[in-house]
Image (tube, rainbow, N blue to C red; front, side):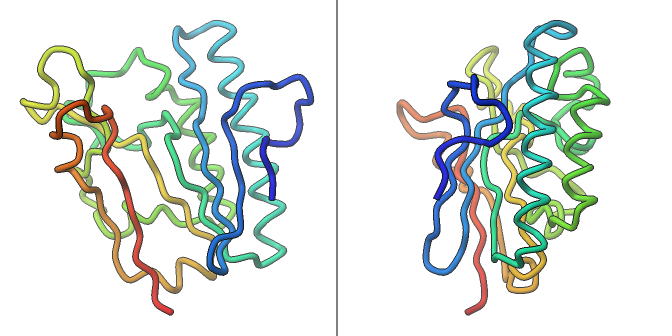
Length: 181
């Protein structure tokens, strides 16, 4: 239904795709990393998040069953990282990034993994450096945000951690939700 995130006609980055799939509107996104911060890359990240906020605000009143899924490049809580102090200077843990993420939740979106695992400890990403995978030094930056009508159907959700351990695997593990009919 949409191949770009509205709001910046000069944005040529392939970071947003929206499609209707089996009665759901699924938006797949790759939010900018924002490093190094401060600087233009971090400013771009925050501006992109404002555009995502605007698009998300359009979907909710239309009552379209929707999921905003992808790599948000935001670690929302200290319990979403193996060591809370490990990323304090990174764009993924800056107060502005976290506030923008929480603003989405404030619209009425539900963070599926946070709902089912409020204590945290559900990593979706392990860096390729310094043996992060082998030492389970991961963090949660991949999120599945559900519109209210979809959140009401949420049965379960999780992370397929075993995929990360495969040969030539991504540094991200697949996340998923199971919805009631």
